[in-house]
Length: 391
Length: 155
Image (cartoon, rainbow over all chains, first blue to last red; front, side):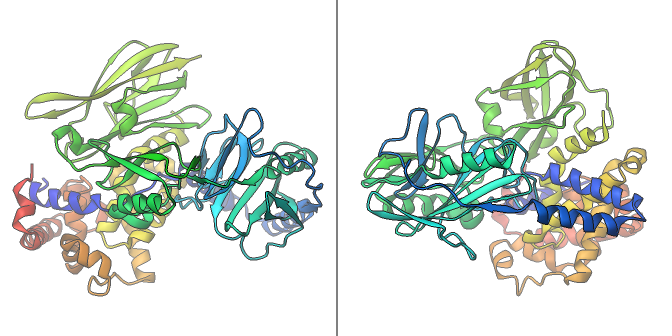
């Protein structure tokens, strides 16, 4: 039997440890490699040599076309500017920001602000285009293959390099100390190279503007001082922060939980930036952080965060998906759930880690799922989400 | 349910607590995720054994403890006196790092990871009686360290 006093002390200490998302896919891949290694006794060395030769053969580099198509000061139709400081690049408007896993893009996306905080190894899938915007130089080994003048500023462009199915090029704006890495893994190298060249031509320097800074590494680098640091940064670059405290987000106090407009968006100097910051604990419902996870038969992993659940988000999953709810914090063991609808059914896996808050998507339809905790004999609802099951 | 689906569900739920368990057991924060990851990869590699195990939580925690011990052999248990950041900012963690390993294992697995004394004995290789003795000593040491104010709102 545990001791409530020491449990509370340990919970409090443990809460100070920042834990990032689990690297599920890399763990599955690593375990697969380990199992295969166990089975492979003969021929491993030969395969390694073949793989090395294959990889070396796949590497090629190209010279890119000239700067005739550099854009004007406004982004082309269907594109938007994203950048750091005054340096921006045009990306398709529909591209989301930071759609990555283990630092690798999982769909067309623009990544703002530098290195991923997730320390795991991931592979870039095929058919994905990406632009990474980082503050700083292009790194050791960069050699400018072409130098252009864009609005009076020099822009250095490296060669497009294709390796392992992905073509990429680096564009550096020395006066702004900003680097753009453009990459594409869409099909044949000729096509990927053309896409990289087209995207790389979209770099500009916008006078009188400054981009909203990234928030990605704030929590890791500055912990509970993240808010102070971010607000100071905004003021330093000429933007006006408007901070609102947010209760019950499940995040540690001082964590920046949201920024509007989103990081990377260029604004006229003096514009307001709304910063949402997590406040401290207050009510019992704020002493627990809940989440909902799901994994379908194709191993696609989806999550609803504590915030998603509080605002009544919708989780759309295909039939056959496993869904589970979990909690962390001092009321976690009292987590309960009730459903309204028949598209999900309680999971038969009674020994599972989430019994009885685990379900299987059994038929198309919608089910409302309400999560609650028990405090002093009363049920306190944390939020209701819609689970939409598709064929 | 497939092996990888089971694993994904398990990790999706247990990951934060396992990482924090590793930190409380003395693993430096920067290495905790790596150690837990290695332990879970080992579990997934032998997932059939995890399925067959009488108690899945005991199995996973036993693998985790083995990995932590191996990591500690490569890099000795951190000394809070030299680990200024952790020791200064969190007296409970500082005290935890000073008590003997058996006591730390017992109190963290029972009072944080959620195992009972029998499960803790199975996960650590300690005898049931030894776990009980270690628990009493470790709890007394931790409570004595904590400031009174931090115990007032224990609920």
